[in-house]
Length: 519
Image 1: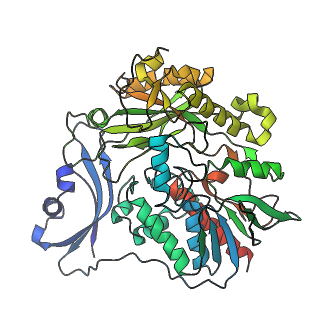
Image 2 (image 1 turned 180 degrees about the vertical axis):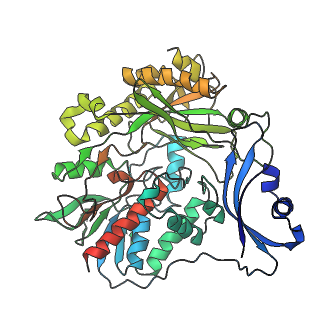
Image 3 (image 1 turned 90 degrees about the horizontal axis):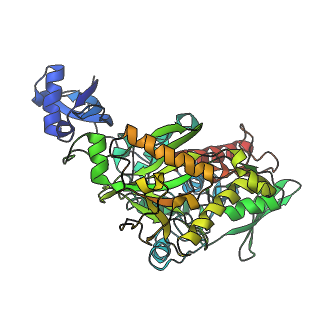
């Protein structure tokens, strides 16, 4: 029987198979030559002490013990060309994994994506970065793969209760992701590698009879007697089906407005909002690893920090080691920031959203918008930032210590944000209560992470699309909308997920519930 072992080793040993076998041989008191194979089941970094260790969970096979490399396979899909149709609105992780699951269950998905395919999006990303042109249907948020495709590809989720995380990770591996994502404590694919995986998922959907339609925006949902009958596209085309998975992501404001206009029940939802902070990766490494140089065997260091300030949580969000800041506006007249990292995380800067939790009472000045009050609050900050920075895709920026002292920065060095920055006192961007919390919070961060509070760090504003400002209520058992039969609100945009993995899980769950309802 193979022997399972938990151990701590140095980064050098963890990175070298021969050194690891030598170490394990001493642990289990056999010669290294007797060890046939070592499978690493889990790997994480312990940087709490000055001497950094790697936590490993391994399975050791000795000579003579049966061992065979296992290849992760896709489920068996059958052709669904002539099967009952289900409309899936949105080709982000919720929509794509819902479509795959529908095929697995013998149903035909018709996936409608307002944006372009994953390769076609690149031209529009270049336009927003270089020419400050925002395409409302094709950008960092909209298009094949959704916001996650060009926003780092993080696969870590705390939402273990939502469903089978391992299944989603294994599906991604079967579609070409590295098997490392099954092992790492904080798995990550990388913005440069995720597009090919997304493309392969789309090809698989089409191969087995599903449809994927790009540049097809839903302008109306057909409802009769409180039951879904289909949708109308921006060209006036109608697609009929009585089952609809609505997986449009957290930035599809036109969908929220459509539901509100049609008096389909939605509700305001709290979210978090703040800035994106950029430091040198070298500084973050020195803080996290307590060393001048991290060496070749440690990855660029991430960080996670949470503080309570004036009764509010202020915390890091979507931290990108070795990454860059990107322009994520979805309409002209607004600026929005987000961050991403390539798979090697080899850029010289590290960035993270630093955000403050909001409450429904914060949206009172926008009460006339009803369920859309939070969305209008969010929009007002993005539009104010656009105006203050010069009405392009440049963003308001400020050195971190200057921000805590309400001082306009005399200059802003070049950052990873390609459209550029404008020196602005960020207190002008945010409501007073939010500014006060962030100023105090950064000082608290500096006490916990010595060196973090520095004027070499640049704050970019705003980081405003952390999650959906709207929830589309659904029955907790059937996942069907509380009011409209056949409508399945799904994923991050509906308020039921917070990242690639949880969105994919929710997509599968909605597909399962539809199949159950049809039995």
